[in-house]
Image 1: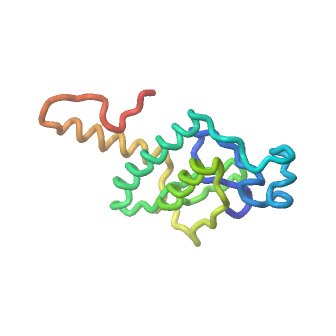
Image 2: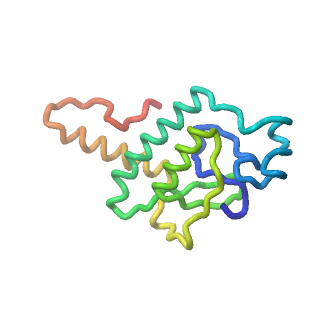
Length: 155
């Protein structure tokens, strides 16, 4: 992504993106100060980080299922590294999360050309939308049971 070493991720899963991630470090990360001599890659993800990424992938699929038919093309991410918004389509966001899960890092990806910001929503908006759909479905449930909903949050 132009202007920095950014990975389209929300803040829930904490994974540091370094020069190694986008190949901008000297010798493609070999001399990166984030890694010692002889390191071949980023440190492995913890079980908690892996679980967070799997949760993110599941949520992303719910968001896409609900929002794509309404014309939403993906997620907008505020990047703390470059102070810019990145518009990431559904497929690229899922690919980033899978790569993060598999490799512990994401590579740099080209953003869409001249995206319309109205076509993208924040993770929080998508989550709130999914919660609203779940609450509406619960209220219309004929059994009279009103639980926490499929997408309800514990916090």
